Image (tube, rainbow, N blue to C red; front, side, top):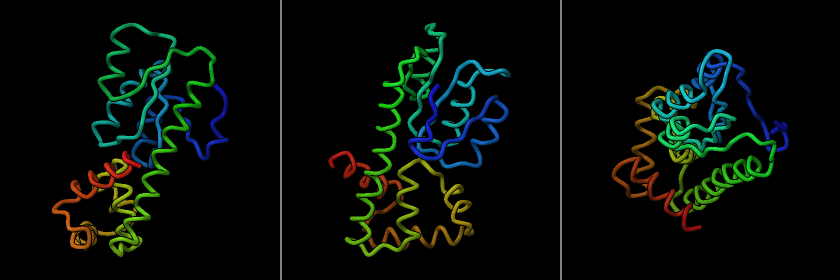
Length: 178
């Protein structure tokens, strides 16, 4: 497969074990899942990522297009592509994933002005919209859970939302409408 370097940083895992290790240490814009890895199925990695709250767009690539493989991909909220050497479908997927992240950042910038949000509050809002859990937010920002909770409460007071999920959902609705 062609290099994804033209789209920015990318991380490659050549095995299920390596992918599972990386899954816990990275923030993902998009996931490319190869079903056939030397030590198992990339679908196992995708299912584990979804269970951990990773909601980044996912594209499952394989030469194996049996019904059970396709169903597992769709059950994990992923698109499915049979490997063919056609780069255009992969490029379209990457552009869509990057566009979503960019649109989230644009709408969040509007919220920053509208609600006088701090950098930390914008970080919490955008990363929550991209599927990060509270634990991941605290770890990524290198703050204690109690400090994160205080930042979330400040964010909610400014936006008038009752829960972070409400603010995130409202942000994503504005993204979809933009």
